[in-house]
Image (tube, rainbow, N blue to C red):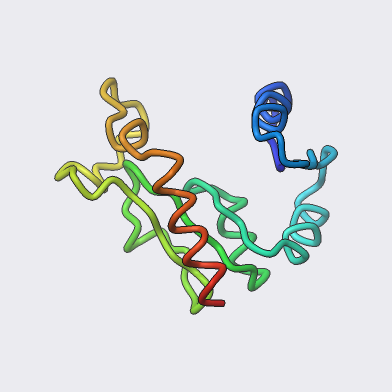
Amino acid sequence: MLWGPGEKQHAENIAEAADCGVLIAPPTSLTQLAALMSRFTAVAATDSGPMHIAAAMNTPTLGIFGPTNRDLQGPWGPASRVVYNKDLDCLGCNLTRCSMRTCMNGLSPEQVLEELKKLVEHT
């Protein structure tokens, strides 16, 4: 599991709750991150630098979208998919500070996992 500044404790909590042998990556530089991602079976990430790095490394990439526009932001390529809360009409608003956060909170881990499985099965 990858993590960014201030997120290591969150990663450790998630890994512990997953109870399936999740490995937590050490701190990495951007080039180390790219090398690491090139070896992954797949990457699920929010619209962020790591999502774009994974796609650039031709690693199957699932982009998790909320307020940013998935059609403009990618990821692109045959080994890429996106997941988002299809029940909302405010998607793509680009408000990074929304008090409702319905777009992300309304997207269940099960929905993300289902799309990730589809991605891995078709690549």
